[in-house]
Length: 481
Ligand code: ATP
Ligand code: MG
Ligand code: MG
Ligand code: MG
Image (cartoon, rainbow, N blue to C red; front, side, top):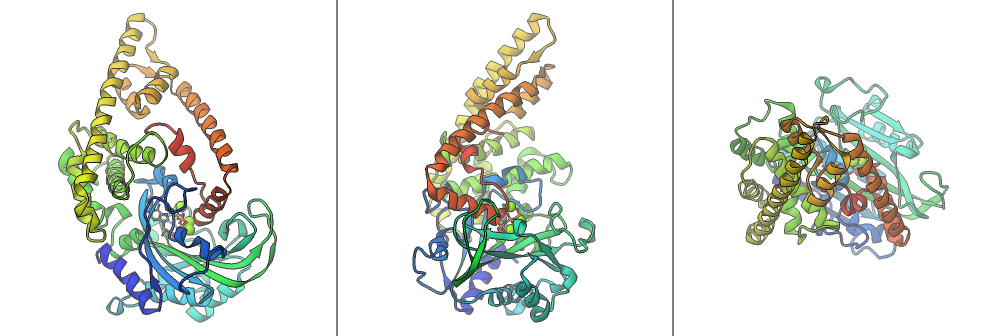
């Protein structure tokens, strides 16, 4: 089943169940305190915390998302994209736990003929909060899930709140067991040891309690909310990778054609070498993210969103280079990504002249950077060799190349090896660390001056159990790490 159809099925299913269908908002977050839209709930937060009245009791969407904190996972796990689409359904004081669980089960295991996804219910596992007996009973008694497939987690592990007094509550996360060939069975244990066997598909958040003051997960629950809410998120690409029988989200119909084009461009075969495969997946992911970001009005730049975009384009171009090709890459790859994404986002077709001009110009600028960086690098190597000492490029030289010339450290290392020169990687790492600490201190200063940032960084903490690195990453993190 094509990804665009999985998307349509989602929306049709929730439309049939009386949900208002909301359009995706832009990747440029509607809230100025976060750079990007990181989850389907972002445009609905005011209805959940009660600062605005929801215009409908139920809503569903397929939301475009960017998560910069997942960049290092891309290509290495089976399931993380920097760009992805989060399917969601929401209830604002309408149905609660039973309704949300019924709806999720109905869609995942519903037959293909009747608009469902046809997944085998026996392969589903669910993580819940250890004290949430109500949810345990719904899964075991109402749905009939094998109790062995329920894993109980602590409040720290599976509880949502905004980080401030207000709504809070437990989650139930649905995982798909891909089978014993992907690892040992999680008997009563952790279903997320690295995410390969048990794929997290859908997170159901139950906004149930009113919470008081306190840091982290150390706050009191003051009682039940009068108006409870449901917020869910399911990765469209993850469902697609299961339904299309693929090994990971980069091999689905909306992403793989870029890998195929990369094979043609580089003469390499996907599947032949593990590290080359990672590079091809990074290329496919980053090309798509760049396409979608430029489509939503972001332009390459030296800070904020523009810097994220710049880093994505440079990482893609560099990965092509590391696969042995020195020609321009974007003109070959970007149109392929556009062709497959246009089924769901027709605006990409009409806007492609503008989008492609921006992407191609950025690649050209990076090529010039590479040229000047190469000249500096070669000069340093000549001096080292003529000095007669052991040729070791200093950490400070590597840092200057990186910081001033946008020269990625991988590239410095690769070229040093070719030139028979070593690099003081520890010195480089120490300088990078210093720079990051300075950036973190700056970001912290900014953060405490802006109360909304707290809300959203906690939101990500809840959604992802991960830290939002958008600020530090985009401000000063290494040019192209
Ligand atoms: P994971 O633990 O796999 O990183 P998560 O717990 O961070 O996922 P949530 O914040 O719960 O994810 O987001 C809801 C859903 O969105 C997830 O269950 C998953 O299906 C999807 N999702 C999250 N991050 C990504 C990503 N980087 N790429 C693709 N899908 C994602
Ligand atoms: Mg989750
Ligand atoms: Mg998770
Ligand atoms: Mg995550």
